[in-house]
Length: 286
Ligand code: PDD
Image 1 (cartoon, rainbow, N blue to C red):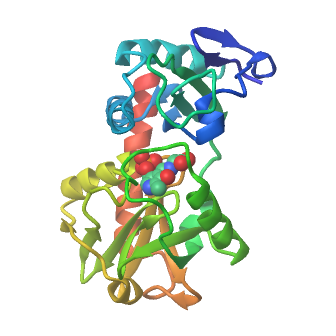
Image 2: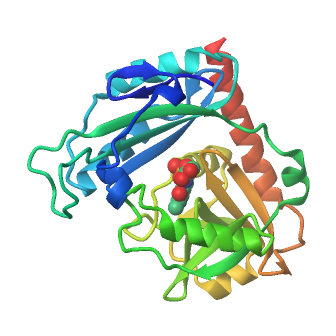
């Protein structure tokens, strides 16, 4: 397996050691990022690192590394399989403290981890048929804008979708559909793309922003506003987006067909734009 980066050193995964007193382990006291990389080129690296900084600020932890320092780590991790598509995973925790005490240590030394995992090639069956989603009450906390490693609620929600035979759980709070358990949400209504606005109740997805930019360039009308659950159910198209899943068409929701039950025309357009964007990134690497 590829080496990983832990606290300043590149080591084989089986050599990597973290203390049981690490607050990431004891409290889930940390934040993370997932950055897709195509042929060794991270997609939207600057934006991901900016979001990491926002998450760190959200939990009162100073950035342990600068963007150029992160970049060097990414280059080394990605260089072992330069042609492959991989996801970079980074995690920063509040480090090891002598006692299990909820209060912050006065001088935390963060634990910093970065590693890669292979990204699955695009599943053509998904493009042809779409995926199923279910709706679930959003049982997460009120700071979903922080990409926190404390993911128990998301884990339970995603598992609940899995057990219902669905790819994703779309989360509903106070009658509003906000995002998926591991993805952002888009709907299409009367030719217009709609996604909920950024705020503390959802993660500001990097793929989400890219989709809005691509929609702009393609001349697809779009708006950021709340989506009521009834509107979700009447949508012509529903999509989910994330760094590792790109943009996926949801064609069944809680067992009912979305629109025609096929991936819709606007999804076809945005997917083409997204694939072109990736191809440009790969070409720049060649
Ligand atoms: N999750 N919303 C939530 C709750 C997420 O966990 C994610 C991504 C997104 C999409 O964000 P982005 O487009 O920046 O990947 C939205 C990652 C992939 C994960 O936890 O593995």
